[in-house]
Length: 168
Image 1 (cartoon, rainbow, N blue to C red):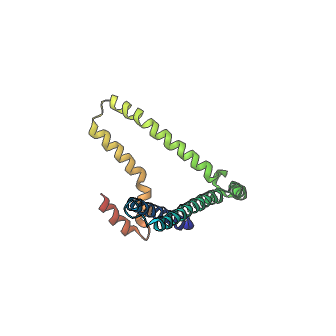
Image 2 (cartoon, helix red, strand yellow; image 1 turned 30 degrees about the vertical axis):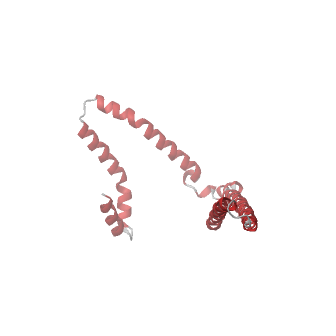
Image 3 (cartoon, rainbow, N blue to C red; image 1 turned 90 degrees about the vertical axis):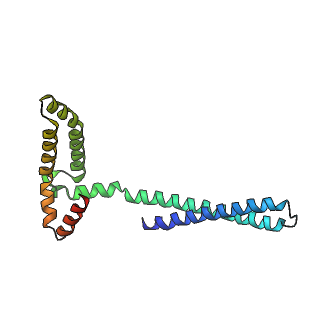
C-alpha cells in the first residue's frame, strides 16, 4: 500500500545510517591507538550507533506490523462470502467469479498438459514441421481474433496497433 513505501524508505535510511556510523567507528577505533584523548569521540559515536540500531529495530517492527495489518485487511473472507451470497442470483448460471476462475485455471492446465501429447500424435501422422507450425500459429491467431477485434474498435485502437507493430 501507499504507507508501505514510506516505511520501507525509513527502514533503508535507518540501516544506511547504522552502517555509516559503524564505518566511522571502525575508523575512530583505528585512530584511537594513535590518539589517547579521543575517548569522548568514541563514546559519542557508540551512543549514535546505539540510537541508529534502535531506529532500525523500530522501523523493522513498524514495517512488520504494517505488513500484517495490510495482509489481514486485504483478506477479509467474511466480507467476500457475504458479497458472493448477496450477488448469488446475478452471476451467469449461478457460477461465482471464484469458481469460474478455478475452472479456467484447470482448463489452462489441461491444455498445457495435453500440448506435448497432441504434438507427438501429429508428428506421427507424417505432417512436416512447417505445416505443423503454420497450423499451430493459425489456430492461435484465430482464437485471439475476437480480442484483437475488440481492441481495434476501442478508443485507444490506433495506439494499440502502433504499439503492436513496434513489438513485432
